[in-house]
Length: 173
Ligand SMILES: Nc1ncnc2c1ncn2[C@@H]1O[C@H](COP(=O)(O)OP(=O)(O)O)[C@@H](O)[C@H]1O
Ligand SMILES: O=C(O)C1=C[C@@H](OP(=O)(O)O)[C@@H](O)[C@H](O)C1
Ligand SMILES: [Mg+2]
Image 1: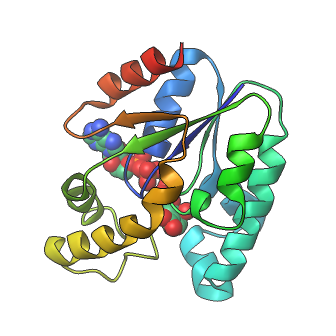
Image 2 (image 1 turned 30 degrees about the vertical axis):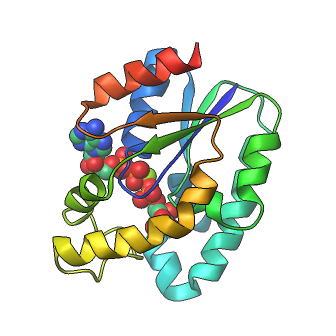
């Protein structure tokens, strides 16, 4: 089975995915790390030198490749992955794939992202937490219609990583 973690930047897809994989004894793949390895370049560098449209093309290409795998995998995608091309449709229709939306409030996301923006090219330019909240609010409005198609939703606000992993496992099995 492949369990795909989706959600906005800093909702916890990468870090919770690692923990969940350890707990379930699944392999762990982070789509951004996978792209960085294949492209031999960081996500920020790809955005800068080749542009976002190129990144989205590669993201969709590697997602398709990974969804064909039939081992047990936790796949953490990027915040934008479900929202481009037919990626969400592919995730929903792939065999033996379960999708989980890690749902976080704007204030949870903004307080994390203001400290963790350097490696995230879409928000790296935003200076204050207030401006970050405004950006996230508008961005989420576009993205929620994709995220909310996930089969399982788990709220992550004010919870420890271990608590969230437990909640995910309860929802899954
Ligand atoms: N529930 C949580 N409690 C505390 N820190 C968290 C929690 N979820 C995520 N983080 C931290 O927030 C940052 C962003 O998380 P990350 O897993 O990279 O998110 P994503 O892959 O969704 O962008 C990381 O530093 C991570 O350790
Ligand atoms: O939301 C987005 O469009 C993006 C999210 C990032 O992943 P994280 O959600 O893991 O930060 C990364 O794929 C890229 O910077 C674009
Ligand atoms: Mg990530």
